Length: 325
Ligand code: PEP
Ligand code: MG
Image 1 (cartoon, rainbow, N blue to C red):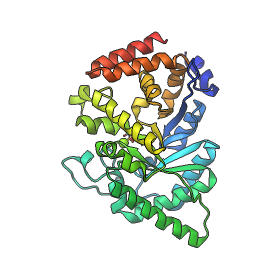
Image 2: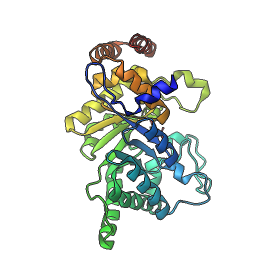
Image 3: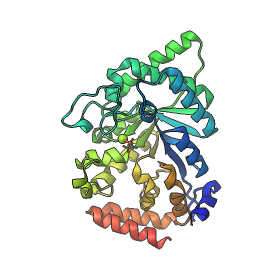
């Protein structure tokens, strides 16, 4: 079965009736990139850079980061790599960076909030990413955005870094695409305002589900309430796609929901064409894509949007997946 799946690595992800999908990999290291490429990833939809900062005694230098980003950009070739700026806090910690004791770390000092507060650190990372953009198709993404001000502040710092590179005559892609994660409910509600500020959205369902449903993604006791197929989650995703479409920017999904092949009808119905997932999931999702009739899948998804409970939707999507083999 595994060998059969591996034969699919070089096959295009296209439904029986010709709807094509772009399947990219989520990676946190060069080793994971190699695995993603082996399993046929068309580029990297999410490079979680925090793992470059972990398991060390101090922050990685600009040069150390640059070398890794450049290598990844070169390895993905003509495809793109979306490099996400540091997303620590919440469940992710650094031994050498004292985070405050917090009552609610997931609602606390996290991700872009830290980057905007620690401008020195943020600029080092942005410089390394911009320099790497000269060597491949690099896109930049900010995590955990909850307001227009945050995007504007991050872009202002990016511009400072660009000016510094210009002064030194260091080459980089002046038109590097800039996107944001949509993973906080506020971002969904103002998606049409955020869309005016950026080139693309990537929906992070892992955090979106926890914040929409107020269910801590790490808490075992309420894990049964962590429901990606909750009608509120589906509506949030639909709103985000609508806003992106109205303004004309790209939208993809990079949370674990993208790796659950039962979700395929939802993406096809909503018109989401790019999915990014852990390397291990790529061939499974591709296999399911090849066996799916998009026309049928869309009817199933429409029914899901009419359902009133997570369970009904999950049952319908599971049955559809079994039926299409
Ligand atoms: C997400 O929140 O869905 C996501 C992709 O990011 P992470 O899992 O790294 O928080
Ligand atoms: Mg997240």
